[in-house]
Every structure is written in C-alpha cells, then in structure tokens.
Image 1 (tube, one colour):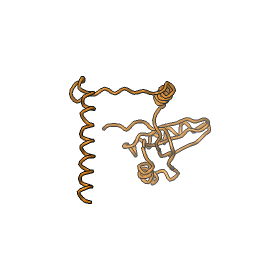
Image 2 (cartoon, rainbow, N blue to C red; image 1 turned 180 degrees about the horizontal axis):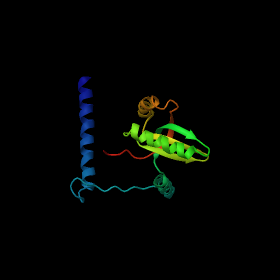
Image 3 (cartoon, rainbow, N blue to C red; image 1 turned 180 degrees about the vertical axis):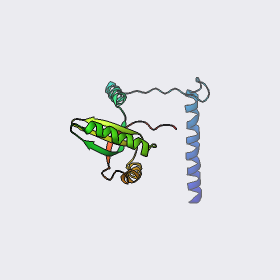
Image 4 (cartoon, helix red, strand yellow; image 1 turned 90 degrees about the vertical axis):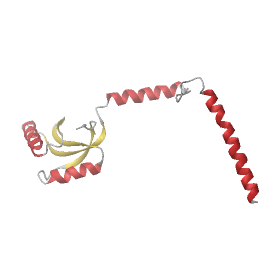
Length: 146
C-alpha cells in the first residue's frame, strides 16, 4: 500500500515537472527575467477602472480622522477660530492644524490620522488643553516624510 502511494506521488510530480518547460518556452523570445502579459477584458471594465481613477484624482485626500477642537458660528467665530488655531500651532507643533468653513460653522481640526487609534492617542493629549475636543472622520492628506 505504501509503495502504491509512493509510485502515485512520483508520477504526479513527474507530470508537474514536464508541464514547466512549456511555460518557459513561451517566454524564450523575451529578455531574461521578463515576460509579456496580455490582459483581455470587456470594455465596460476598462470604463469602470477609468472612472475610478478619475474620481480618485479629484479627491482632496483619503478617509481618515482628525481631532476637532472648535466649531462656532456668528460674527466673531472666524476670529475665534484663528486664535485657537494659532494657540494650537504653538502648543502642539507636531500636529498640523486646519481651519475649515462649512456654512455656517468655522471649525478647527488637528492632525492627519490614518486610523482611529492614532487619533485617540492625540485626542488624549489635546483634551487636557481643550476639553471640548472630539474625534471626527475627515479626508486627510498623505503623511509627511520628515
């Protein structure tokens, strides 16, 4: 019984080994280590991929998180937002701050965090100075390479 299994295994491996030269024979006309790939797909798939590329190029970032420190509306909201942003820049220079206007609110947000855990760590640090801070979903920029 063991011999039968061993012989079957050897036959299977030999068939696999003889299948490989056909692959290398088709690549013999190319440079060593390089091959040619031909992709066949429907035109609708090309249109969807093109639309996906177009939408992503128009996006001003990708989904992430920020810590929102201030939001307000009214006649003095813009000045208050600028003051808070300036104090944030001096108190927390490691984080970028953003002044956002979404009618009728001025908002001050801090950081570019890719996941909620990173945002939570910064939130705990910022919360000591700004107790009304909270984490929000936002489009963030690519990380800086410092």
